[in-house]
Length: 226
Length: 292
Image (tube, rainbow over all chains, first blue to last red; front, side):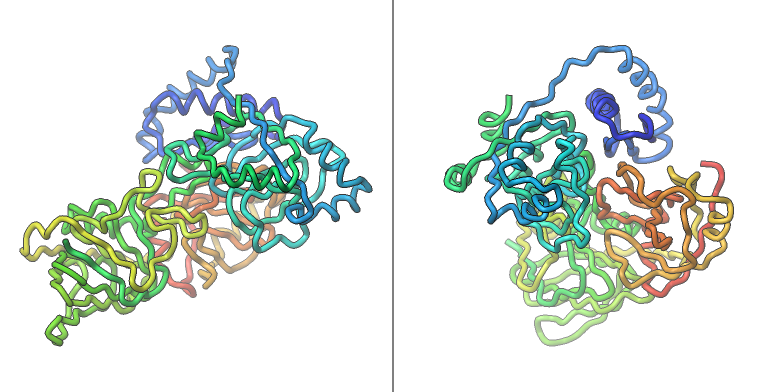
């Protein structure tokens, strides 16, 4: 079953998507997976019988969601980020492309509170946006084979964090000092669709100090979200 | 205590079950056995499998009882034998329970004209679930064992074999199907009647680049009249996506959780298992159904 919210990827559509996602996910329906993305929600049932039994309920719920004002349960994150050259593999490329300094890139990237459109591509990978227009950069022409875990990337009008080492085509501009996906936790992902995420710049020494603390997901929630 | 050790790995040896659900919105793929029909059959002989099956592709592993004794059963179309502790060698068959004692080694050779085979062990493999499932997604590094199995991996099975009785079921006869009924995909309208016509009239060849993530097909290019780059959206196993080179990919169990290629059609769940068993080089056709 597909719930379609239109053809665009705008923040207002995504807010609708995530509102519907959390409502339907909390209905306790017998579904296998419910997958939100920019403008759609795909709901997967074990078979078409179960789908047909629940279709009406979801459709009804959807019409009610539209009329309700939504109380946000989403978190606000302030995430430390180190933009040192040792982590920011593509900083030079972006400086050259946009004719801006390293400081301007950091100021721009830390100036906004980003919206978490959805989690996808790999476990715990948040699609965040939208980044300031001066930073909009195409994906790398040749994707990297190994992007270091915890790297911060930008591509088109989005920014992201790679939860673990992975191939990928985003431009890498920094790194965060902790893991954002933990398989030992029943709620394994630090970020959830709809969360707001902003970054603040830390130097290499501060980065290492945080890194050494080996925060768990629950400790990170306490420390860096509100 | 009973224990089993891998003495030879075969290929693509992983632990799988019926799938890991409820986490795809966090980027976690469903995974699970490529051919779910077989582990369903094995359930009849080893009901106490604890959802921990070993999957192999093309070449099976050798497993040896290090300590105690275990009851196992192999599913799939494959050759195998047992090297007994006393040096004798005995033949054995899939879909028949096998009692293995200390020092016995089960050698599974190749799968015959198929790809995947499975081993069920009574009382499971002594593993803990990861996100409520035992399945392995090696690309994402998720699973009770988050990598392919390797030589010397040892499984400790605390409970003893419940009965030495021999159980068997007739070998399931899976007809080798090469024509698959498919249903309209969410971006069917991206393809002109002409493109759809060539989709159903083309004989596609399964490429050797196929894996647990997707079965790649080679044939006449099926080109979208709109775009081959859509906004990423949730996808599910069985979807047939068409990237810009026009060569369709049937998405399998280790799907990326969202995808940005248009999906022309989708296979039924039971056909995902069927198509997984076709080795590279097999030729297939699609029959597009209009009623969903």
